[in-house]
Amino acid sequence: MKFRKPALYIQILLGLVLGALFGLLFGVDQNLLILEVEEDGQMQEVVLRDWETVLLRSAEGEWRFGAKDQVEIMHLFRRLLKSTDAPVTVIASGVKGEQRFENVRSMRKEQTIATVIKPLGDIFIRLLMMIAIPLVFASLLVGVSSLHDITKMARIGGKTIGYYILTTALAITIGVTLGNVVQPGKQMDTEARDRLLAAYEEDAVAKIEQNISVDFIDYLVNLVPKNAIRALADAEMLQIIFFALLLGISLLFIDRTKADRVIGFFDAISDAMIRMVDLVMLIAPYAVFALIAATISEFGFGILQTLIWYIIAVVAGLTVQTFLVYPLLLKTFARDVPLWTFLRELRPAQLVAFTTSSSAATLPVTMESCENIGAPKSVTSFVLPLGATINMDGTALYQGVAAVFIAQVYGMDLSLTQQLTVVLTATLASIGTAPVPGVGIIMLIIVLRSVGVPETGIALILGVDRILDMCRTITNVTSDATATMIVASTEKVFRSTAAQSD
Image 1: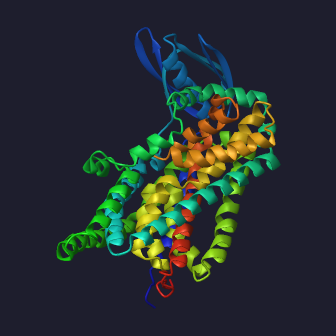
Image 2: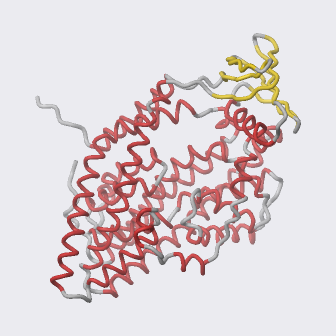
């Protein structure tokens, strides 16, 4: 019997599962640190292992950590080393008794085969990012120039923006509600809070010092690129969308023969990029294996236990939003879109989103998945790039939970008015700060300011931001795809026969 190659999403899922197992098997020892200690002007490497408690002492004070707090120990050590010229002392207690190391100059984890193979995953992400910009520009230009009706483009844009605002507000509401029901902040002890605040204080201050605010006038002005080539080179997605839309519309008003030459060229570019996506996806299972193996091997599970109720609240909210809200929206506004076909075809994009934690990197895969379901290029090329830039339902939901969590940790009970302020501010901020790198935490700072919650509280959640970012990116991508199906269906351009069985 001839062997049938498994479907792509099965291969990626296998890569994910095997990568997780590989990461566990060759995980970084969470009870081992490699120190460089200066003695008599000479650097000496010391391996510290099997501790029960570790005490870090410097001119700023001293902090005690347990056996599973490797991540917090390293973060605090780096902060102390940067913030003071005084030496850092490490005192470890365990089965070997007390070990004291004066004048510690560096601290690092061990390297394993699981962390060494991570560059393969990084190459995969870079390949997808490389494809995204030319694919978006070419597809959007061709799609707009083929509409022959500017009012249709305006209608599609209105529906898309309306959907994104609605689902973002809904996601934040779900997050705030779960924060009140689960009450994760009231279940964190004071000692754990102080350790996290000390360990991640430097990262939190760096975010706060960016001093980002929502300014819609500047935001609208910055939509227009001063240099279209630079916008393409810098991957300024909103500026690229604006330029592609304007150029596509302009082609409708010039000689048709000349316009067809331009359209034909970019149509070929679009087809080539889609083919390139197929080629890049050949290494997807191996890249997913490498990325997940590195993440699992490096991640300290001690901090997961400290923030377990916060994590439960966020993941529960993301599950409701992804597998209940979006299917209901499809059933209501896009009844001609087969739900199971939608979920089946979107699986590769969801798995890539989980692995890469980037809607932008996943964009080429999402576009291909939505076109396989039945959405035309004229819709996917506009709705999806815009969504990857400004639509962040998963991020918004996590902000709702995080705002309530941080307030609870500080003993603050947010009133109904303050919680409504959280919903409104986070909804506006999700659009107004879209071009900013690290937008999730930046948006959260704006939300905390709006209700008077200490901004330094973001230090409490930075330690698990990476793992939760993987989860919320699935929700972001699913939301973008849902918007695409709804727009395609309501515009009567959905091709119900396009989806093929596995």
